[in-house]
Image (cartoon, rainbow, N blue to C red; front, top):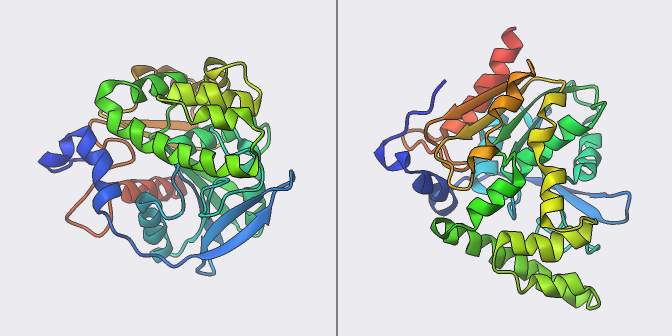
Length: 312
């Protein structure tokens, strides 16, 4: 199944930005708050159909259950009989979290906590997007054992080389994305600083002008890394793809504006029979727009992948 867009969406920037600005999807969530082992909380949002199978969705940087691509996928699968569980990362559910700690691409312990809510299901599928795709890949590549009912996974537009993606973010052609994310991140740093005024790295982060600077000033010191480079080395999923033990679709677009060539795990995927790597010519970053239907090509491809596995 290939993505064949209309002419405007053969531009990676248009494909990336259009869903955020123009797509409208309505879903009705049921919110549940769960406590984390370190005394914080995670808000998860459900669409329940009484199914024996559940799709767990992990959003991207500064996204949430309200992101249009998350709602679109949730609606598409729920209409087809699936329960949906959307993980909101710390500080992404509309309420600031209790700890200084937020989230990052290697913070798999929070995903583990969320997956504990799926033990009653016969079949669990996890799917991550952008940073969330890296999170899913890290969980699957770094854990020796998974939950027993985990059937398959999908990672969409995952920056498998975190440093390469960071440098792409900081190119002049990507200024709109860089400014957008830094503005959202700094807003959270400022809110958190009111709760923890002694946290120097929170204050320092307000001075960041690039993604790499932000990771140097906040992410690295907060999570115990020496610097941004050390952080990127530890969370880059291309190092652990070889360890994945269940079927997974890694879906990426060649025209993704925030992916460096090193982000595409072509060689890393060859040695693992569980990995299906699909690099489409077009699609942008978590885009895959389709205007002639209610659904986007992305959710159709994800559903097709699972149905094909079930036939094997």
